[in-house]
Length: 131
Image 1 (cartoon, helix red, strand yellow):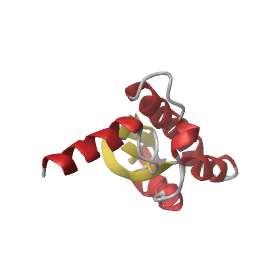
Image 2 (spheres, one colour):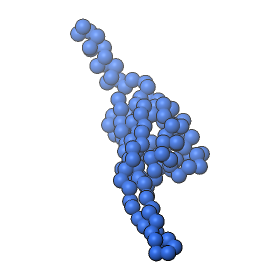
Image 3 (cartoon, helix red, strand yellow):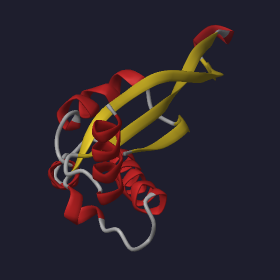
Image 4 (cartoon, one colour):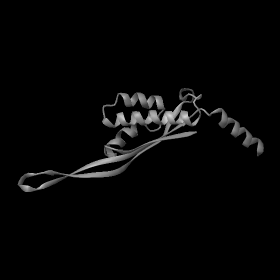
């Protein structure tokens, strides 16, 4: 079972975000959160909130009685795409203007459980019996 969390128009370039995303891709949710807490990059604070949201989405999707700690959640997929760019001008000497481009990015994190849920096990055994 998968759950997704997304951030749209995060005020940071996708290139800077990908540096931190590469560190958490494929790791367990708890291990990724511990790594993000001690990373000094600004992207880590955004991603920490996003991973927590993805875990909460997974719990909500499977009912409030299910705890994510029991099912060993792993970050299956995470990516950052370029968002819209705010274009501004800054005054420069001799009446010129320099362009300033403020980048944004869209980030998505997908978490998945390693330990199968009880409903998934029942579905697999029923499919095997039908064959």
